[in-house]
Length: 126
Image 1 (cartoon, rainbow, N blue to C red):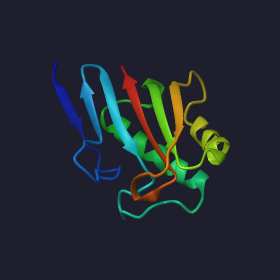
Image 2 (cartoon, helix red, strand yellow):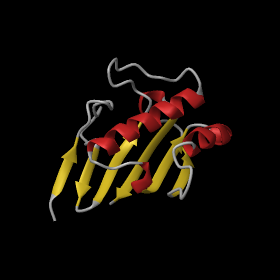
Image 3 (cartoon, rainbow, N blue to C red):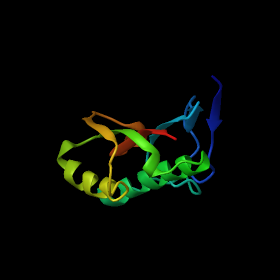
Image 4 (cartoon, rainbow, N blue to C red):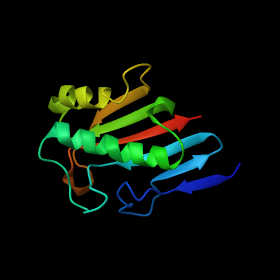
């Protein structure tokens, strides 16, 4: 099986030795995305709702670059700094999966890259 590296200019460039996504066969593994603006490199984190939407837009850009969409996502992992923000994050996240949402886990962590409040990764299959 071959693997293909996916890169979208509409999502932030990796800030370490990893790819935005890797396609292996018909499965796409999207690295964790944070709320970085791809054009300016600035964090979008005035509030947790805005930050979550920015993360989801970055995920969408990477999915789209590979020819996938949120309907193809089978699994997400959400890392959050404060479980007290779970309901607000969940409300924003849920707007992208109106029917047949993917499997998921949400984990509270002590720290995330660039001290963001939320990071989300996903796996999609065609």
